[in-house]
Structures are given as structure tokens and as C-alpha cells.
Image (cartoon, rainbow, N blue to C red; front, side, top):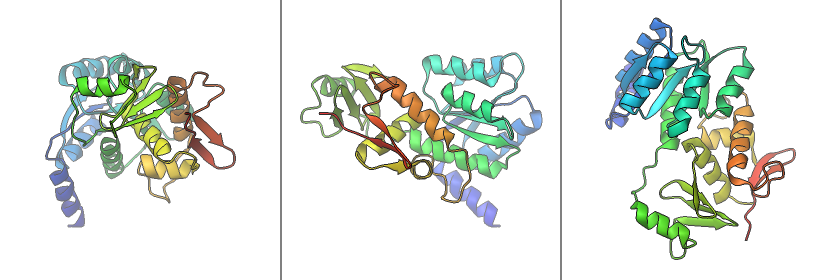
Length: 262
């Protein structure tokens, strides 16, 4: 009874009918995830191998991708590379319990989160909900011309623009510019940057970042390297010299912090 009530509540939140692509070569997993995700209010499309996943992605333009690493024809890494050529859509990878390298490689290629096999459908539902909440802006959309003008003008008279050194952050459109040029960030990368920038000078531990950005509960055990990989990705995109960062600093013994530059 309690579970049915939970599903009905989640279904109400999903009335916008966001679309999820589930790619896995195991028919049983596809069937279970398709059924469960539809029950909580999502549209679902599926693929049974990597090549089909890319084809379905291009045809259906999903809001999120759930992607198994080990698939025939093209593995999950290849699919992630193909998607990241053109899209910042959130990606959750499914990976084996003991293979840490799979998880790290997937994150380095641009995945936003991972779920370890075997997993409960309820766990995946929670991760999908959390990632979508953090990566899809609910703000009123500002016309692109206005946003670009505000960014190129240095953000004057635009409360949505945060400027630090050569970096301009448009919080309304969730976009970032460096020396006037747009830098593509995934939704989770932007959410992580936004947390640190809005609290410049404050150090956050990896666990605190996971709670704030990934919405993991305080007692949830996860490899905190997911934070390290995202920090590394942000530095590679924002820092003039990622090996000697000036913006996103390591707070020794604590975690990470953002330092504004005038």
C-alpha cells in the first residue's frame, strides 16, 4: 500500500512526461525498468545494444539516458562518447559491483552518475529523479539574444550573471562563458559549479557535495571519486591551467572550494 502511494505521488510529479532511454542488452532489466519508470510517470524508450542506443537517442531526443556499460556492437563508453559529441543530456551508467575502473571511465567520459548492479528499481528511480531535478532548469527562459548580450557586456545590470576573472556564469540559462565564448557543461557540472560559486571561500567535503548536488542522503555509501572526476572535468573546461587551478581549489583535508578572481 505504501509503495503504491509513493508511485502515485511520483507519477504526479512526472506529469510533464519526461522521456528516458534505457539501453541494456538484458531483456529482463529493460522490461523491469520500462515498467517501473512508466509507473512513476515517465515515457520510456529502449535499446538492446549500443548502436541501437545511439540511433534511438538521435530519433527520440530523451531527457535522460540509463546506459549499461557492457553491451554488444558498441559498449556504453562508445555510446557516451557519441552522445557527448552533440548533447549534454544527463547520463546514468549501470556498472558491475566490483569494477571501479568502469565507473571512473564512464564518469570521465561525461556520465553524470552511476548505479551499481545488482540494484533495486527503487534505487534507480531515486537517482533518475535526483539527476533530472538538478540538471533541468525550472527557471523562466531568457531569450538567447538577451542572455548573450548580457554575457558579452560583462553582465552589467543583469543579476543573473556572475563574473569572476574571465568566467561569466548565467544562472538563469545555466550557461557559462569564458572570454565571451560559451563553454558546454553538463547539468551536474553546472550544479556543482553553482554550489561552489554561490558559496565562494567555503570549503565543502566530498560527502557534503554529494548531498547538495547529487541528493545522496548523509548515510548513503558511495565512492566519493564521483566528485573528484566532476571537479577534474570542471577544471579542464574553466581553468587556464587545470594542473594549477586558480578558481576551483583543493581544500586540503576537507574537499573543494571556489575562489573568485577580480
